[in-house]
Image 1 (spheres, rainbow, N blue to C red):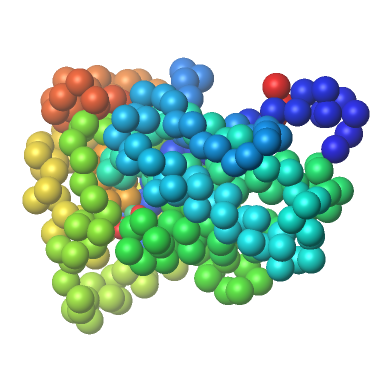
Image 2 (image 1 turned 180 degrees about the horizontal axis):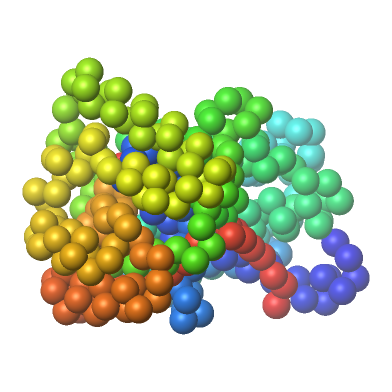
Length: 331
Ligand code: HSE
């Protein structure tokens, strides 16, 4: 650890909210979000050296997590990390214990990649901390992403990277799921606004996966493949109209929308008011609308705030893509 960082030895990592699937890429496409008003939309994890391991949970949604630290995913991230350090030959006596604090800013079961945000913030914080402490990164980015997917799978019931990858890397991300290249960052349109509205109700990802059919008809399979391939090509050729036209969900939305009160009205309003695309963020209930100008984004944001939000827990933000992904700082 450098002298300047020794003096400020608490490290804080931030990991942004994300849209899983982005309608057209079930389990294969994800986008990191950054509200344009500068507000935080993601979890933070602090680490500092202590006598023994402890985890404290703070923040608006702290009381929605199990009270015992042992069942918190951040504790599991820490345990996994320490195990890997031991496997790498580091003696337990040479590894300091850490005090960790999770600032739980994202609602659970929101479709905003809440568990992914906690996992990415925790593992990014640990990797940064031990890189400075040991003088060498315990994990490469790709190795860390594989671990993030594994831990996220423990919560959602299956391994998919469409939240952890954009949350960690930033931007719009396509899953390659190759051992040496889990995810690929795609170019996107910088002037697109992503209005993201959380209704305030909770939908479990495992339950929202259970309601999907186990087989997909041939026609939908072909449409899914065509859309994802054409979308990716259109992004590289900067063909905005074609890219937006491909953003349709043939896999999950037809089934999941029944879990989302006011979904059809919200889609209709967004489409009638200039949205290029509209869909469910991850497994819902958050919905998102893509606009190519701020005026339309503001109108849709206001309507969703007034009509899609169901209770005091809900919120809506006009976002752009968070190109940074996970970040860390000393304080
Ligand atoms: N791709 C996942 C799903 C995202 O739609 O089930 C939720 O984590």
